[in-house]
Length: 132
Image (tube, rainbow, N blue to C red; front, side, top):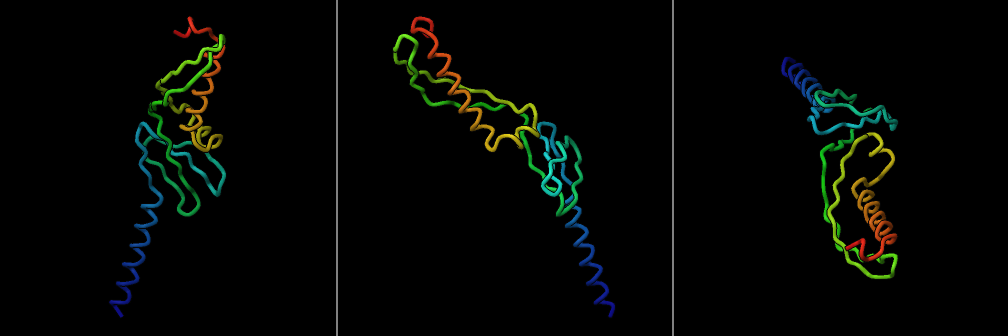
């Protein structure tokens, strides 16, 4: 009889520990946790200790540090119909973590596409002498 009670208490303590681990998140200074409660965004939380309701809240981590990526050489045509191959490096940084999660599926891919499109538009409006 006593061993049954001990087993039940141990299982309840184990359940409490598991729920506590699921509820507590520690967010570093350079990250934010965008919290969704039952599918609805309730905002960005952090840095520090963030408490979530288990099985109700879901968190998506967003890194706020500046990142860079190399874009492979792009062939662009200038205003005077000269073909130019340009390679460049793009830096991006998330300013608004909620918008970066809600409005764009792949933030880095969108930044890459926007950078390439902007490069081609700018180079396409310039003559070869100005590009060089």
